[in-house]
Each structure stands twice: as C-alpha cells, then as structure tokens.
Length: 103
Length: 174
Image 1: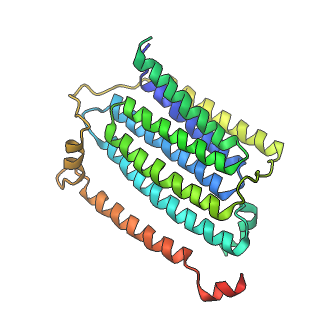
Image 2: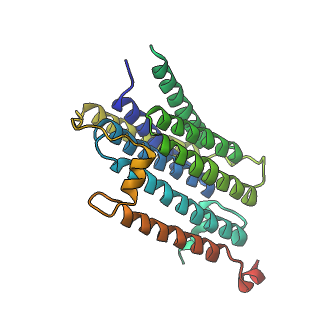
Image 3: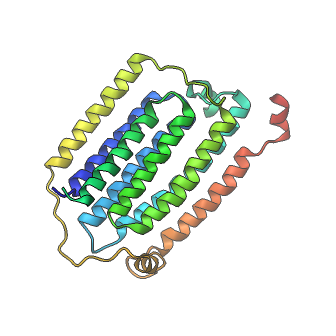
C-alpha cells in the first residue's frame, strides 16, 4: 500500500506526543526548548500534509508552515538569550532554580 | 513494495527514532545531535511530498540555524560530557501515561475521521507560485503577514541584544 495522509498524520501525532513527553520529563531549559521544536515540527508536517492531500488547489498550508518556521526561529533566539542570561546570574538552567523569573 | 514506499518508512523511522532518543538520552549534547537527525528526517519527508521549497527552508533554518544555536547555548551553559541527573521514576511514568493517553485519543480521532479532498486542479508548489502569492496584495496574497513577520524578526533581534546585554549593575552582583 502506498503511504497517504493517514500515515503522515500518524507520524506527526507520534512526534507531537514525543515532544510532550520530553516537555514533561525534562528539567533543563535547553532540552525543554528542544521538545518545543519537535512539537512545532509536527504541526508543520500536519499543515503540509493537509495542503498536499486535501487542498492541493491552494498554497495556504505552505504559507502557514513558512510563517511558523520564521516565528520558531525568533522564539528560539529569544529563549536562548534568556537562558544564557539566567545562567549568568544563577549558574544553573534548571527550572527549579528559575523561580524568581516571575518577579 | 515499491521504492518510494520503502523510502517513506525509512524516513519515518529516522524521524521518530531520533526524536525519541532526543527526549530520553541523559547526555545533553547527544540530545542536540539526535534532534538534528530528526529534523533532517522531517526535511526528507517534505522532499518525499514534493515540497522542495519547504524542505530547503527546513534545512536552512532548523538544521543550519536553530540546532547550531542550541549547540552553542549548550557549550555556554553546560559542562560538556556531564550527564543530566536521573528524573524521578514517578514523574517519568506519569509523563509517559499522559503522553500515551493523548496519543491514543488523537489517533482514534484521526483514523475514524473521513477526510474529503477537493476535486479542483492542483497548484504546483513551485518557487514562482509561492513568490507570487506571498508578495501579492490581492485576495489570498500574503504581503501583510510577510511584513508583520519581518517586524517580529526585527523585534526579536533587538530583544535578544537587550536581554543578553551585560550591564554594569548586574556585573557587580555576580
């Protein structure tokens, strides 16, 4: 059988929940950021699969993917700036030690 | 089984296997490398779907940009080669249970739902079509979101510089 929409949706769903599992178990801010990247990638894969198999007459899913990639790049850059700043003041990037971030 | 089907399942196994290793390994640098291969697998899936432009963007931005940024931040904030502490077993178990329940719920919904595809003629996702629609100002054009994203990137750039700037007053407290 030739892989179609359901196989790609299976991959993106499994990828999403792998990211969710990593986000729940990790306590290091950099690895939590990696889990978020996995989640964003599964969403991108969903948009491209729906664009390809359900609405091939339009390109909207593709544009959503491009904008999500741009926003993810900006988000990763800001997050890493915050993480490095946190490391400077606390000498640790575990979430347990970052409680004062909210004040 | 034809060649393209085999390639699809190989790419799927590459993506999911490396993603699973990236969230379970205890060495943070290896996690970054597994994430790199997982993102390459997703770029391969985009190539398999014949969305070459998105695949190229994925490789340039994610593999070439974000993962390199993550590796740099690991080197700046972590002692290389040192293992992360083991998580509590109860936390791992409950996280796996929550993820598995969500996975089962979503998969049941996805496989029960009948998707109906449009019957209209397909538009080729070529660079010319993408460029014309992205910078078009007529109905369906994406010129305004394009400008908004460019402002967002500028704001992120300035924000990064301001956040990471070391000021004199915080320098004394370190």
